[in-house]
Image (tube, rainbow, N blue to C red; front, side):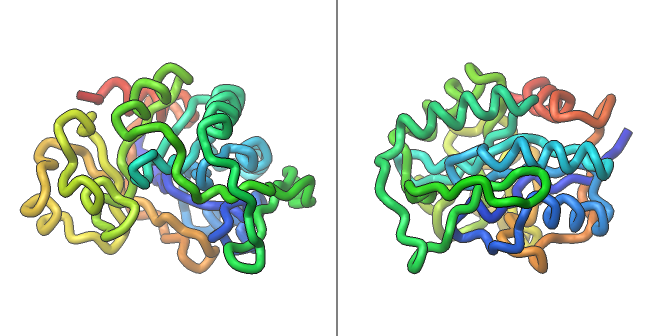
Length: 238
């Protein structure tokens, strides 16, 4: 069955995410927009995923626990996991492999941890947008070891993308999928980069509620679950 997706969304835990991007707000907005399955992919953390998954269960939206990993090259990667436990283990791993530079909320924004009732249960003190010491090539194996799947984020962007940093989606980093933005010109991307045969996953990368997009793109799954999403990517990987 086909389901409408958005696999790149941020919550108020991302320093660049609006404080209105609470678990309830973003999941319910996804419902209003006609989406069936979304992924919460905050920068370098999965700690708001438990709350979002719980809200999703209440309102009938499948929430895939995820992360937007910043690699050592400052390339952003979308990481998706089949359940909260695996996502949180990966989140702890990434925390051990980042610099631990303190956030400055007055400059970068607050990093709010919330429960499923949108109550603030903590505030992340380390700046989450810093690069980890995990390379883009290492990321594939490490994410798989944690039960998930990873692909390059927003390859159409001129910053924090694999194309901006390395010049192309290199063969060793092309595992069959790449993320693009909603306004990307697919034909132009195909002309510029070595992505022939690569499935392009179009997502919003929304940091604000108003940047979330109406249901447009679909993924075909045997069932609506985070496990089915990860299995989809793994079964079609190069």
